[in-house]
Each structure stands twice: as structure tokens, then as C-alpha cells.
Image (cartoon, rainbow, N blue to C red; front, side):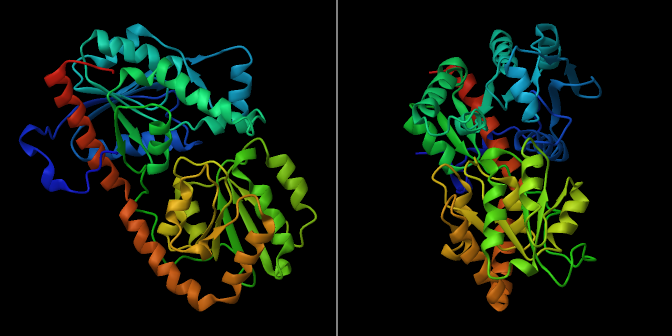
Length: 399
């Protein structure tokens, strides 16, 4: 049903190119404030380390292998997107043609006007292309409080296909969940299930603790926004038998921070908020006792991977709109979505069973090693080569 590179013996290595000239097109690249931007930055770095020439076209200043464009402003839409920490880039044909000159392939991360115009230019220049599907419709419907209108999500998948994805034969999906959603909504192209991956730096290590050793420290990482459901975690902690000894850390920022701070004021130990550098985050993860991922919507969840790659046992929402469920090694790491009582029971279980938590910590760290970004980029290379070879053989873009 989906393309997988697990069996490398079936690959025709004779047609594979090892040093590609790759252009990545994404609205935002310079700020690591969302999963798509983080993925683009890490893929660019790793592809360069593996010997490829990588150029990036996005908002920002131009520099070495970076082609910058100004932010685009759209009435009403821009105001909403800014609240979510996202900016749209301005399409610029001159910049696109300059960046694409001599490229072997152009890869697109999002289906917005910037990428659509860029894809049109790439086709005019006769350059092979591929695209990624990182934007779940529910990310939009939740933030306009229309999450219960299922037809809106279906409509988005189909509109995105007509507007953008129909012109691509090769689409990167960060999880089987997303690939399945695309298939259900009529996407017939080659779908490549490739994890966004986790950096090698995220692993178990001895650190000088930055948390209170007298407390049971629970961490949740992610934008402080409606669909991430940090409020469910705070409610669960208040209902725990051990509420007086639990300290919650919320790593991230976003539009719900003010409301979450107010909610936390009544807790026995108010949550600690912070936005951390990579080094600080690794240290915090290795200082905590449990990770909770309460989000209702996830195309994969880099934050959760970073946590369990460090050996932090996760408790994950079993939401039907989240791919993160795939990471739970058993039911003790799952709770009923939007149910703080069930989450409280799971938190209490892990507090009461430290020996089992230590065993599962090792197992989760081992699982983390199977999701390294270095392996994801190798799979992306194979997708790029597929796209290039198919283009040469068939000379077509969409279907």
C-alpha cells in the first residue's frame, strides 16, 4: 500500500545518485517553532553531511545556499497564522529560478501559495519534484474551533490534492497514519512513509538534574495550543492520588499559555513553563520522571520521540486523529483521549511502579534508536532518486 525501504535488497543501486543538488522549499526555515520547520532544518543539515548540495528557499535573509523572500500578508489569514507562530512566504519567480538552476530535484514541505508557485516554476524548468504532507486538516479546524465538523477535514484533504498534491507522483508521509488518511481521500501517488526522525543527541545520559529530586517530575513538550491538550494533563495531575508530589513542566510557547498559567494557579505545585534550547531540553528530559503526550492531533510527534529516545517513559493519548499511538509499547503507555481521570490512573501506576518504569525506560530508549534522523534522511535520498528516475523514464509530474 505504501512505499517502504526496509528491504534494501530490492533497490536498483545502479541508477542511484549519491551526490544530489537538492532544493528545499518551505515557508519558514530560520525559527524552530514548529515540527515542519524543525524537520526541514534537520534534513538539510543531514543531507549536507552526507555529501549533497542543499539550497533552501524560505522567508528570511539570503546567504550561503539560502534564498530569502519576504513574508506574505493575507487578510484575516495572517492574523490567525501569527497566533499559531506561522508565517507565509511571498512567491518570487526570480528567486525560484535562481535557486532551482542546476538542481536535480526540488522538494516541497507544505501546500501553500509559496510552494504552489515554486512547483509551477520547477515544472517549467523541467526539474523533478517531490512533496511532503505535514499539515493535518485538524490543525486548522481545531484552531478555528470547528473540530467536530468532520466534513471540513475531508474537504481539506481533497482541496489540498486538487490545489497542490495532484502534480506530484512522490509524497513523503511522516507516518502510516498520514499515508492512510491520504489513501482514504483519493491520493493514488507513491506514498513514502518516512519518519521525521530524532537527532542523535537525544539519548539517555547522566546529567546534573534541573528538577526537584523530592518531586515526581512530568514533562510535556509542544506548542501551547488548543489541540495539544496541555489542559488535560493539568486536570489529570489535580486528580492524581499524588498531586502534592507531582511537578509538571510545560516546554514550549503558544496562544494558550495565559489560560494554562491561570489553570495552574490552583494546583498544589503550579506548572513550570519554559522554552528551551536543544541542549537545555535534553538535560530537562533526562531530569524528568515521566513524559505525557496529550495532543489530540499529531502527524507523528517529534517531541514524543525526543522524550522516549532519552529513555523517558511516555503516556500517550489514544486519539483516533494522532499517529503518536504507534510509539506506545503497551497499554500502560496509553490513556483515553481527553479523559483526565484515565490519565491520572496511568500517572499513578508509573509512580507506584518505579522498577517497571526503569525496565520500560530501557526499552523506549532502544525504540528511539530506530527513529534516528540519519536513517530517515537515507530513506529520503531513496525517495529523491525514485522521483528523479521516474521523471527520466516517464517525463511526467502528476496523475
